[in-house]
Image (cartoon, rainbow, N blue to C red; front, side, top):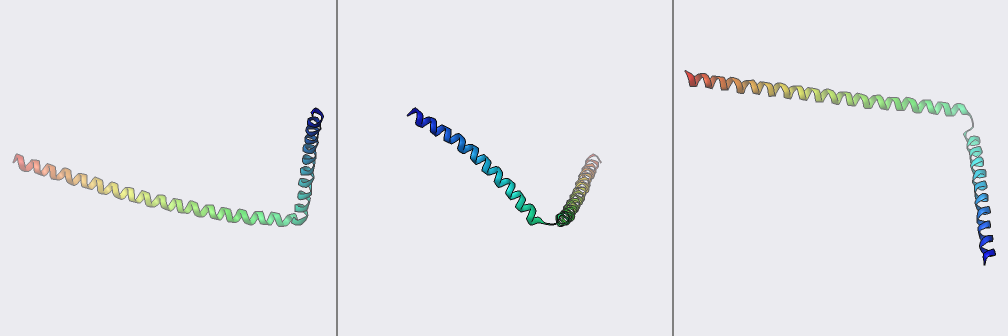
Length: 104
């Protein structure tokens, strides 16, 4: 029984080592295949340039939208502030006129 457990443990250790070796071989081979299929590295550089141009255009468009939204928010706030201040002044002037009327 002990010998059977020992052999089983020994086989598991050797199986783990074999699995690691197989994974390493697969990794190297897949890298080789990918490099072989990609071919000319200049094509990769061109693809990266195209992606960077499109990405920067997209970001500039998002920044432009955010900026225009900020302008709209500022405009609304300023308009609200003017209306609020005007209504406060109107309330104050009506209060003063009522006081004048009471004390006359």
